Image (cartoon, rainbow, N blue to C red; front, side, top):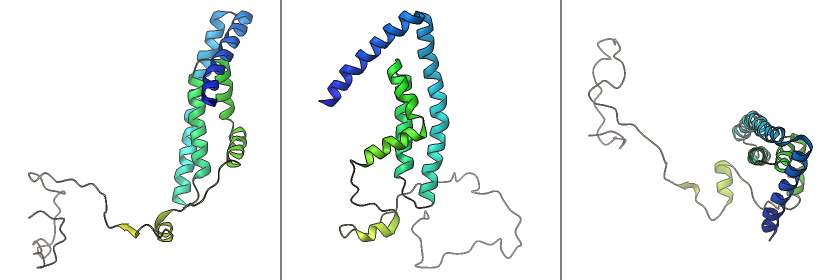
Length: 180
């Protein structure tokens, strides 16, 4: 029901603001402001989004909780969507979401309503869950490339004669990755 009211009230606010601002400064300046805020928001969203993405990668690399950087990234994305939506109210909310202090305040309000029951990263977190296998199901997902047999797999290198001979495979020791 809240979503219904949101979709009803926001367009009414936007129409009212368009009428008020358009009456004060005229049609073309009003449209120019809407277009400029969309362009400015796009530039700000890209720069702050790149910073948020770097912070997300850093938190994963350092095995830290990525919740805060992910929340910042989501709010920056929402700010971009609001700035691209024509209107003064949505532009104002979008620009406010690009301010880090405002994002922190919004996260604080959301955090009061969210309860985390479990968080884990890596193999250590998988061992704590008795319903999962300790090291996954034994399947490793990967990609491979079959080299073109008409050209050498790597550039030729001048090797000493004793190293130039191919090494025969040891019986019973095939890796399963070679083609026969």
